[in-house]
Length: 277
Image 1 (cartoon, rainbow, N blue to C red):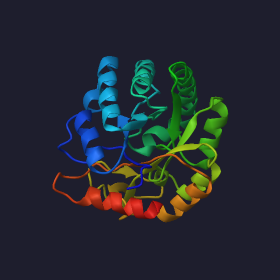
Image 2 (image 1 turned 90 degrees about the horizontal axis):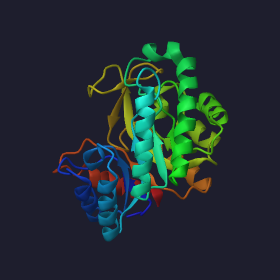
Image 3 (image 1 turned 90 degrees about the vertical axis):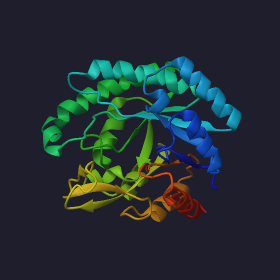
Image 4 (image 1 turned 120 degrees about the vertical axis):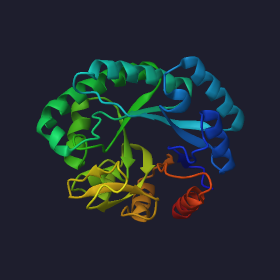
């Protein structure tokens, strides 16, 4: 199995903590995890993080990134910014070089946020600067993906990188771009020199919200997550582009819909392994 593949979402429902997660990672022939704020990390606790890091070290597993949902605009912005600073400390404690967090938590209708786009954009810029500066002191670099309705698309993301005026990295999320009218290939091409992480997710765009958690696409319809390789993302083209630009980072599997008895995760890993070959 290609050792540049890592788990992001936990692969099976039986995984109840990060010790389980580490064990399953090793059993799957992998050696890396992109951590997030669930299970043991639901609350930021440095001592817990150190113990998990020690167990990961004993199993030969590294943490490639710490990713977390956040909403850094609006009434709760200060609380969320301070929370991200705490997770920067957690990222450092587990040996992760990166802290990846969202800026606007847009699990809602685009009509609710787009009228405030400029306001949210400016608020987000200020928040990112503050978190980046704090994380840097911890020895961690903050990184950002093509996300939501505000910080997405080539033109807007280029403006974000220019105005934030910090050495932030870019996460190429191969699915999120479909919230806009753009293509992930254009995003990869534009930011090829800044990409430090890649999220593999796949989706379909349907008239209805099939899963109950589908997000509206500005193309029309709803984005519904599906098994990687069974949706609309052209992974082979994206991988070719990413490889040609000299990328040597990890490819994180973002698919958390598996039952324990399901062979889907093994199928996904084999599929991605073949693509990378």
